Image: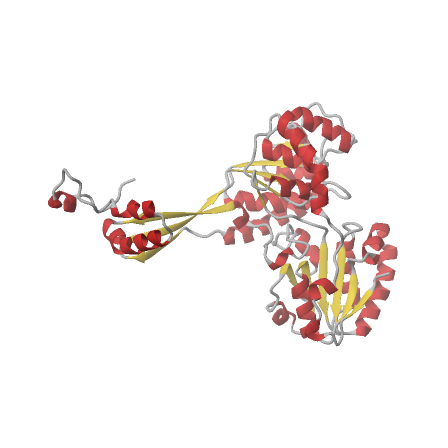
Length: 449
Protein backbone atom coordinates (compact mmCIF):
# COMPACT_ATOMS: atom_id res chain seq x y z
CA UNK A 1 0.00 0.00 0.00
CA UNK A 2 2.52 2.62 1.13
CA UNK A 3 5.76 2.78 -0.82
CA UNK A 4 9.29 2.90 0.58
CA UNK A 5 12.16 5.24 -0.13
CA UNK A 6 15.59 4.00 0.95
CA UNK A 7 18.00 6.81 1.84
CA UNK A 8 20.41 4.64 3.80
CA UNK A 9 23.98 5.38 2.85
CA UNK A 10 22.96 8.51 0.96
CA UNK A 11 24.89 10.86 3.22
CA UNK A 12 24.98 14.54 2.33
CA UNK A 13 24.99 13.93 -1.41
CA UNK A 14 21.19 13.74 -1.55
CA UNK A 15 18.88 16.75 -1.51
CA UNK A 16 16.30 15.51 0.95
CA UNK A 17 13.75 18.10 -0.16
CA UNK A 18 13.58 16.58 -3.61
CA UNK A 19 14.09 12.99 -2.44
CA UNK A 20 10.78 13.07 -0.55
CA UNK A 21 8.09 14.28 -3.00
CA UNK A 22 4.82 16.01 -2.20
CA UNK A 23 1.37 15.91 -3.75
CA UNK A 24 0.87 17.99 -6.86
CA UNK A 25 -0.68 21.33 -5.92
CA UNK A 26 -0.31 23.74 -8.81
CA UNK A 27 -1.62 27.03 -7.43
CA UNK A 28 -0.32 29.00 -10.40
CA UNK A 29 -2.31 26.91 -12.86
CA UNK A 30 -5.45 27.35 -10.77
CA UNK A 31 -5.10 31.14 -10.80
CA UNK A 32 -6.15 31.17 -14.47
CA UNK A 33 -9.45 29.52 -13.54
CA UNK A 34 -9.96 31.67 -10.47
CA UNK A 35 -9.21 35.10 -11.92
CA UNK A 36 -12.56 35.43 -13.78
CA UNK A 37 -14.37 34.54 -10.54
CA UNK A 38 -12.59 37.30 -8.66
CA UNK A 39 -13.23 39.80 -11.43
CA UNK A 40 -16.93 38.93 -11.48
CA UNK A 41 -17.32 39.50 -7.74
CA UNK A 42 -15.29 42.70 -7.88
CA UNK A 43 -17.42 44.20 -10.65
CA UNK A 44 -20.87 42.71 -9.97
CA UNK A 45 -20.80 42.07 -6.22
CA UNK A 46 -23.69 40.16 -4.69
CA UNK A 47 -25.22 39.22 -8.05
CA UNK A 48 -22.01 37.40 -9.02
CA UNK A 49 -21.66 35.69 -5.63
CA UNK A 50 -25.20 34.30 -5.89
CA UNK A 51 -24.61 33.07 -9.45
CA UNK A 52 -21.31 31.42 -8.55
CA UNK A 53 -22.78 29.76 -5.46
CA UNK A 54 -25.52 28.21 -7.58
CA UNK A 55 -23.01 27.10 -10.22
CA UNK A 56 -20.39 25.57 -7.92
CA UNK A 57 -22.37 24.54 -4.84
CA UNK A 58 -25.72 23.78 -6.46
CA UNK A 59 -27.51 26.08 -4.02
CA UNK A 60 -29.77 28.98 -4.98
CA UNK A 61 -29.70 31.60 -2.24
CA UNK A 62 -31.83 34.68 -1.74
CA UNK A 63 -29.17 36.21 0.47
CA UNK A 64 -25.67 35.23 1.50
CA UNK A 65 -25.79 36.26 5.16
CA UNK A 66 -26.85 33.59 7.63
CA UNK A 67 -29.70 34.77 9.87
CA UNK A 68 -28.82 35.13 13.54
CA UNK A 69 -31.75 32.86 14.37
CA UNK A 70 -30.13 30.04 12.39
CA UNK A 71 -26.85 30.18 14.33
CA UNK A 72 -28.75 30.39 17.63
CA UNK A 73 -30.89 27.38 16.69
CA UNK A 74 -27.79 25.42 15.68
CA UNK A 75 -26.23 26.01 19.10
CA UNK A 76 -29.48 25.12 20.85
CA UNK A 77 -29.58 21.78 19.02
CA UNK A 78 -25.89 20.96 19.35
CA UNK A 79 -24.99 17.58 20.83
CA UNK A 80 -23.93 18.22 24.47
CA UNK A 81 -20.77 16.15 24.03
CA UNK A 82 -19.75 18.18 20.97
CA UNK A 83 -20.51 21.41 22.81
CA UNK A 84 -18.39 20.31 25.74
CA UNK A 85 -15.53 19.45 23.38
CA UNK A 86 -15.77 22.82 21.66
CA UNK A 87 -15.83 24.67 24.97
CA UNK A 88 -12.70 22.88 26.15
CA UNK A 89 -10.96 23.48 22.82
CA UNK A 90 -11.82 27.18 23.06
CA UNK A 91 -10.62 27.40 26.67
CA UNK A 92 -7.26 25.78 25.96
CA UNK A 93 -6.56 27.75 22.80
CA UNK A 94 -7.60 31.00 24.46
CA UNK A 95 -5.17 30.24 27.32
CA UNK A 96 -2.19 29.82 24.99
CA UNK A 97 -3.22 32.80 22.84
CA UNK A 98 -3.48 35.10 25.86
CA UNK A 99 0.05 34.05 26.85
CA UNK A 100 1.23 35.32 23.44
CA UNK A 101 0.10 38.87 24.13
CA UNK A 102 2.91 41.22 25.08
CA UNK A 103 3.02 44.82 26.26
CA UNK A 104 4.29 47.60 24.04
CA UNK A 105 8.08 47.77 24.06
CA UNK A 106 9.64 51.16 24.80
CA UNK A 107 13.31 51.36 23.80
CA UNK A 108 15.54 54.34 24.57
CA UNK A 109 18.21 54.09 21.87
CA UNK A 110 20.00 57.18 23.23
CA UNK A 111 19.18 59.85 25.84
CA UNK A 112 15.96 61.53 24.69
CA UNK A 113 15.60 59.20 21.69
CA UNK A 114 12.73 56.79 22.20
CA UNK A 115 11.23 54.21 19.83
CA UNK A 116 8.11 52.37 20.94
CA UNK A 117 7.02 49.11 19.31
CA UNK A 118 3.23 49.00 19.49
CA UNK A 119 1.15 45.95 18.63
CA UNK A 120 -2.05 47.04 16.90
CA UNK A 121 -4.76 44.56 15.84
CA UNK A 122 -6.05 44.46 12.28
CA UNK A 123 -9.39 46.30 12.13
CA UNK A 124 -11.48 43.80 10.17
CA UNK A 125 -10.72 40.17 9.31
CA UNK A 126 -12.38 37.61 7.06
CA UNK A 127 -12.15 34.00 8.23
CA UNK A 128 -12.63 31.09 5.84
CA UNK A 129 -13.82 27.69 7.06
CA UNK A 130 -13.87 24.97 4.38
CA UNK A 131 -16.59 22.41 3.80
CA UNK A 132 -15.55 19.74 1.33
CA UNK A 133 -15.27 16.19 2.61
CA UNK A 134 -15.98 17.15 6.21
CA UNK A 135 -17.42 20.14 8.08
CA UNK A 136 -14.37 21.45 9.93
CA UNK A 137 -16.04 22.79 13.04
CA UNK A 138 -12.68 22.85 14.83
CA UNK A 139 -11.35 25.30 12.23
CA UNK A 140 -13.91 27.84 13.42
CA UNK A 141 -12.24 27.75 16.83
CA UNK A 142 -8.71 27.89 15.39
CA UNK A 143 -9.55 30.93 13.24
CA UNK A 144 -11.71 32.91 15.64
CA UNK A 145 -9.99 32.58 19.02
CA UNK A 146 -6.60 34.13 18.13
CA UNK A 147 -8.35 36.96 16.25
CA UNK A 148 -10.52 37.72 19.26
CA UNK A 149 -7.60 37.56 21.69
CA UNK A 150 -5.58 39.86 19.44
CA UNK A 151 -8.38 42.41 19.70
CA UNK A 152 -9.75 42.33 16.16
CA UNK A 153 -12.87 44.45 16.32
CA UNK A 154 -14.80 43.11 13.32
CA UNK A 155 -14.90 39.47 12.21
CA UNK A 156 -16.72 38.05 9.16
CA UNK A 157 -16.76 34.30 8.60
CA UNK A 158 -17.47 32.56 5.29
CA UNK A 159 -18.21 28.86 4.90
CA UNK A 160 -19.96 26.90 2.11
CA UNK A 161 -23.71 26.22 2.17
CA UNK A 162 -25.12 22.70 2.18
CA UNK A 163 -27.52 21.60 -0.55
CA UNK A 164 -30.00 20.28 1.98
CA UNK A 165 -30.75 23.57 3.72
CA UNK A 166 -28.91 26.31 1.86
CA UNK A 167 -27.21 27.05 5.17
CA UNK A 168 -23.73 26.03 6.32
CA UNK A 169 -23.24 22.90 8.38
CA UNK A 170 -25.11 23.17 11.69
CA UNK A 171 -22.09 22.32 13.83
CA UNK A 172 -20.10 25.09 12.16
CA UNK A 173 -22.94 27.54 12.83
CA UNK A 174 -23.13 26.35 16.44
CA UNK A 175 -19.42 27.01 16.92
CA UNK A 176 -19.90 30.52 15.54
CA UNK A 177 -22.72 31.15 18.01
CA UNK A 178 -20.65 29.76 20.87
CA UNK A 179 -17.84 32.18 20.01
CA UNK A 180 -20.13 35.16 19.51
CA UNK A 181 -19.48 35.48 15.78
CA UNK A 182 -22.71 36.83 14.32
CA UNK A 183 -21.53 37.87 10.84
CA UNK A 184 -21.58 34.58 8.94
CA UNK A 185 -21.92 34.11 5.18
CA UNK A 186 -23.05 30.96 3.36
CA UNK A 187 -20.42 31.32 0.65
CA UNK A 188 -17.53 29.01 -0.20
CA UNK A 189 -14.65 28.68 -2.61
CA UNK A 190 -12.84 31.42 -4.48
CA UNK A 191 -15.99 33.53 -4.56
CA UNK A 192 -15.96 33.67 -0.76
CA UNK A 193 -12.41 35.02 -0.72
CA UNK A 194 -13.38 37.60 -3.36
CA UNK A 195 -16.47 38.59 -1.37
CA UNK A 196 -14.39 39.14 1.75
CA UNK A 197 -11.71 41.09 -0.10
CA UNK A 198 -13.91 43.31 -2.26
CA UNK A 199 -17.18 43.29 -0.37
CA UNK A 200 -20.53 42.14 -1.73
CA UNK A 201 -24.06 42.66 -0.51
CA UNK A 202 -24.06 43.13 3.25
CA UNK A 203 -20.43 42.01 3.52
CA UNK A 204 -18.05 44.96 3.82
CA UNK A 205 -14.45 44.51 2.61
CA UNK A 206 -12.00 43.13 5.14
CA UNK A 207 -8.33 43.95 5.70
CA UNK A 208 -7.14 40.36 5.93
CA UNK A 209 -8.33 36.88 4.89
CA UNK A 210 -7.16 33.80 6.79
CA UNK A 211 -8.02 30.13 6.96
CA UNK A 212 -7.35 26.94 4.99
CA UNK A 213 -9.15 25.88 1.83
CA UNK A 214 -8.88 23.91 -1.39
CA UNK A 215 -6.70 24.70 -4.39
CA UNK A 216 -9.09 27.39 -5.67
CA UNK A 217 -9.34 29.13 -2.31
CA UNK A 218 -5.55 29.15 -2.15
CA UNK A 219 -5.28 30.53 -5.70
CA UNK A 220 -7.77 33.28 -4.82
CA UNK A 221 -5.72 34.26 -1.77
CA UNK A 222 -2.59 34.44 -3.91
CA UNK A 223 -4.24 36.69 -6.48
CA UNK A 224 -5.77 38.98 -3.86
CA UNK A 225 -2.66 39.31 -1.74
CA UNK A 226 -2.01 43.03 -1.63
CA UNK A 227 -5.69 43.86 -1.89
CA UNK A 228 -5.91 42.12 1.49
CA UNK A 229 -3.40 40.51 3.78
CA UNK A 230 -3.39 36.71 3.95
CA UNK A 231 -2.02 34.20 6.42
CA UNK A 232 -0.49 31.62 4.08
CA UNK A 233 -1.16 29.45 1.04
CA UNK A 234 -2.34 26.19 2.57
CA UNK A 235 -1.85 22.99 0.56
CA UNK A 236 -2.86 19.38 1.25
CA UNK A 237 -2.62 18.16 4.85
CA UNK A 238 0.58 16.34 5.78
CA UNK A 239 2.27 14.55 8.63
CA UNK A 240 5.83 13.34 9.09
CA UNK A 241 6.75 10.92 11.86
CA UNK A 242 10.36 10.42 12.98
CA UNK A 243 10.60 7.08 14.78
CA UNK A 244 13.12 4.54 15.98
CA UNK A 245 12.63 0.94 17.14
CA UNK A 246 11.17 2.13 20.47
CA UNK A 247 8.01 3.37 18.71
CA UNK A 248 4.69 1.57 18.97
CA UNK A 249 3.74 0.56 15.40
CA UNK A 250 0.00 0.74 16.15
CA UNK A 251 0.33 4.35 17.31
CA UNK A 252 2.45 5.32 14.33
CA UNK A 253 0.04 3.71 11.86
CA UNK A 254 -2.95 5.37 13.51
CA UNK A 255 -1.35 8.80 13.18
CA UNK A 256 -0.37 8.25 9.54
CA UNK A 257 -4.00 7.30 8.95
CA UNK A 258 -5.20 10.43 10.76
CA UNK A 259 -3.79 12.77 8.11
CA UNK A 260 -4.70 10.46 5.23
CA UNK A 261 -8.34 10.80 6.29
CA UNK A 262 -8.35 14.40 5.03
CA UNK A 263 -8.35 13.22 1.41
CA UNK A 264 -6.51 11.55 -1.42
CA UNK A 265 -3.81 14.21 -1.78
CA UNK A 266 -2.87 14.21 1.92
CA UNK A 267 0.67 13.16 2.72
CA UNK A 268 1.73 10.64 5.38
CA UNK A 269 5.46 10.14 5.86
CA UNK A 270 7.28 7.82 8.25
CA UNK A 271 11.03 8.36 8.61
CA UNK A 272 12.75 5.55 10.53
CA UNK A 273 16.04 3.76 10.98
CA UNK A 274 14.24 0.51 11.85
CA UNK A 275 13.26 -1.80 9.02
CA UNK A 276 11.44 -3.95 11.56
CA UNK A 277 9.28 -0.98 12.56
CA UNK A 278 8.66 -0.20 8.89
CA UNK A 279 7.34 -3.75 8.37
CA UNK A 280 5.19 -3.58 11.50
CA UNK A 281 3.69 -0.23 10.56
CA UNK A 282 2.89 -1.48 7.05
CA UNK A 283 1.04 -4.45 8.55
CA UNK A 284 -0.79 -2.18 11.00
CA UNK A 285 -1.84 0.13 8.18
CA UNK A 286 -3.34 -2.80 6.26
CA UNK A 287 -5.36 -3.73 9.33
CA UNK A 288 -6.40 -0.23 10.40
CA UNK A 289 -7.27 1.10 6.95
CA UNK A 290 -9.58 -1.85 6.31
CA UNK A 291 -11.42 -1.07 9.55
CA UNK A 292 -11.76 2.69 9.20
CA UNK A 293 -14.96 4.38 7.92
CA UNK A 294 -13.29 6.35 5.13
CA UNK A 295 -11.02 3.54 3.97
CA UNK A 296 -11.22 4.44 0.28
CA UNK A 297 -9.84 7.98 0.56
CA UNK A 298 -7.37 6.92 3.26
CA UNK A 299 -6.01 4.18 1.00
CA UNK A 300 -5.78 6.63 -1.89
CA UNK A 301 -3.69 9.03 0.19
CA UNK A 302 -1.40 6.33 1.60
CA UNK A 303 -0.75 4.78 -1.81
CA UNK A 304 -0.10 8.14 -3.48
CA UNK A 305 3.30 9.43 -4.54
CA UNK A 306 3.24 11.93 -1.65
CA UNK A 307 3.19 9.23 1.07
CA UNK A 308 6.06 6.91 1.96
CA UNK A 309 8.11 5.12 4.55
CA UNK A 310 11.62 6.54 4.36
CA UNK A 311 14.45 4.36 5.63
CA UNK A 312 17.50 6.15 7.04
CA UNK A 313 20.77 5.10 8.68
CA UNK A 314 19.99 6.58 12.09
CA UNK A 315 17.89 9.16 13.91
CA UNK A 316 20.46 11.85 13.10
CA UNK A 317 19.91 11.37 9.38
CA UNK A 318 16.19 11.14 10.01
CA UNK A 319 16.26 14.49 11.73
CA UNK A 320 17.97 16.00 8.69
CA UNK A 321 15.27 14.52 6.45
CA UNK A 322 12.32 15.87 8.47
CA UNK A 323 13.96 19.30 8.82
CA UNK A 324 14.35 19.42 5.04
CA UNK A 325 10.77 18.20 4.51
CA UNK A 326 9.39 20.92 6.85
CA UNK A 327 6.10 19.17 7.50
CA UNK A 328 2.85 20.74 8.61
CA UNK A 329 2.71 18.25 11.50
CA UNK A 330 5.74 16.40 12.86
CA UNK A 331 5.61 13.63 15.46
CA UNK A 332 8.69 12.39 17.32
CA UNK A 333 8.55 8.73 18.44
CA UNK A 334 12.12 8.12 19.54
CA UNK A 335 14.10 7.62 22.70
CA UNK A 336 14.74 11.06 24.22
CA UNK A 337 11.92 12.41 22.08
CA UNK A 338 11.88 15.79 23.83
CA UNK A 339 15.60 16.26 23.14
CA UNK A 340 15.12 15.43 19.46
CA UNK A 341 12.08 17.72 19.30
CA UNK A 342 14.21 20.57 20.62
CA UNK A 343 16.45 20.22 17.58
CA UNK A 344 13.64 20.51 15.05
CA UNK A 345 13.94 23.73 13.05
CA UNK A 346 11.25 23.31 10.43
CA UNK A 347 7.73 22.15 11.26
CA UNK A 348 4.33 23.75 11.65
CA UNK A 349 3.75 21.95 14.95
CA UNK A 350 5.78 19.28 16.76
CA UNK A 351 4.18 16.47 18.77
CA UNK A 352 6.46 14.82 21.30
CA UNK A 353 6.26 11.17 22.28
CA UNK A 354 3.53 8.53 22.21
CA UNK A 355 0.96 10.54 24.16
CA UNK A 356 0.92 13.63 21.93
CA UNK A 357 -0.84 12.45 18.76
CA UNK A 358 -1.55 14.85 15.93
CA UNK A 359 -5.28 14.42 16.59
CA UNK A 360 -5.03 16.25 19.91
CA UNK A 361 -3.45 19.17 18.05
CA UNK A 362 -6.38 19.23 15.66
CA UNK A 363 -8.81 19.79 18.49
CA UNK A 364 -7.80 20.32 22.09
CA UNK A 365 -4.04 20.66 22.58
CA UNK A 366 -4.18 24.42 22.94
CA UNK A 367 -2.09 24.79 19.78
CA UNK A 368 -3.47 25.94 16.43
CA UNK A 369 -4.09 23.55 13.56
CA UNK A 370 -3.98 26.20 10.81
CA UNK A 371 -0.36 25.53 9.89
CA UNK A 372 2.06 26.04 6.98
CA UNK A 373 2.13 23.21 4.44
CA UNK A 374 4.08 22.26 1.31
CA UNK A 375 7.45 22.94 2.95
CA UNK A 376 6.53 26.49 3.96
CA UNK A 377 7.31 25.70 7.60
CA UNK A 378 10.93 26.52 6.76
CA UNK A 379 9.93 30.20 6.65
CA UNK A 380 6.38 30.53 7.99
CA UNK A 381 4.47 29.95 11.22
CA UNK A 382 1.02 28.69 12.08
CA UNK A 383 -1.93 30.96 12.75
CA UNK A 384 -1.74 32.76 16.08
CA UNK A 385 -2.33 36.03 17.87
CA UNK A 386 0.63 37.55 16.03
CA UNK A 387 -1.05 36.85 12.71
CA UNK A 388 -3.65 39.50 13.55
CA UNK A 389 -1.31 42.11 14.99
CA UNK A 390 0.61 44.83 13.15
CA UNK A 391 3.80 46.30 14.57
CA UNK A 392 3.75 50.10 14.59
CA UNK A 393 6.96 51.97 15.45
CA UNK A 394 6.41 55.25 17.27
CA UNK A 395 9.45 57.57 17.15
CA UNK A 396 9.74 60.30 19.83
CA UNK A 397 12.98 62.37 19.87
CA UNK A 398 13.88 65.48 21.86
CA UNK A 399 15.69 68.39 20.19
CA UNK A 400 18.93 67.37 21.83
CA UNK A 401 18.58 63.75 20.71
CA UNK A 402 17.94 64.84 17.12
CA UNK A 403 20.95 67.17 17.22
CA UNK A 404 23.15 64.29 18.32
CA UNK A 405 22.31 62.19 15.26
CA UNK A 406 21.83 65.03 12.73
CA UNK A 407 25.28 64.77 11.14
CA UNK A 408 24.82 61.04 10.58
CA UNK A 409 21.45 61.60 8.89
CA UNK A 410 22.92 64.27 6.60
CA UNK A 411 25.90 62.09 5.67
CA UNK A 412 23.70 59.11 4.81
CA UNK A 413 21.23 61.29 2.88
CA UNK A 414 24.09 62.75 0.80
CA UNK A 415 25.42 59.24 0.16
CA UNK A 416 22.04 58.36 -1.34
CA UNK A 417 21.82 61.67 -3.24
CA UNK A 418 18.70 62.63 -1.30
CA UNK A 419 19.59 66.09 0.01
CA UNK A 420 15.97 66.81 0.90
CA UNK A 421 16.18 64.08 3.51
CA UNK A 422 19.13 65.80 5.14
CA UNK A 423 17.35 69.14 4.97
CA UNK A 424 14.48 67.59 6.89
CA UNK A 425 16.84 67.57 9.85
CA UNK A 426 19.08 70.60 9.30
CA UNK A 427 16.19 72.99 8.77
CA UNK A 428 15.13 72.41 12.33
CA UNK A 429 18.41 73.87 13.58
CA UNK A 430 18.78 76.75 11.13
CA UNK A 431 18.31 80.25 12.62
CA UNK A 432 15.24 81.85 11.12
CA UNK A 433 15.97 85.30 9.55
CA UNK A 434 13.55 87.02 11.88
CA UNK A 435 14.80 85.27 14.98
CA UNK A 436 17.81 85.92 17.11
CA UNK A 437 20.09 83.14 18.24
CA UNK A 438 18.66 83.59 21.73
CA UNK A 439 15.11 83.04 20.41
CA UNK A 440 16.18 79.89 18.58
CA UNK A 441 17.78 78.60 21.73
CA UNK A 442 14.60 79.29 23.67
CA UNK A 443 12.33 77.31 21.30
CA UNK A 444 10.81 74.17 22.84
CA UNK A 445 13.35 71.38 22.68
CA UNK A 446 10.68 68.81 21.85
CA UNK A 447 9.41 68.71 18.29
CA UNK A 448 5.66 69.07 18.45
CA UNK A 449 3.52 67.18 15.91
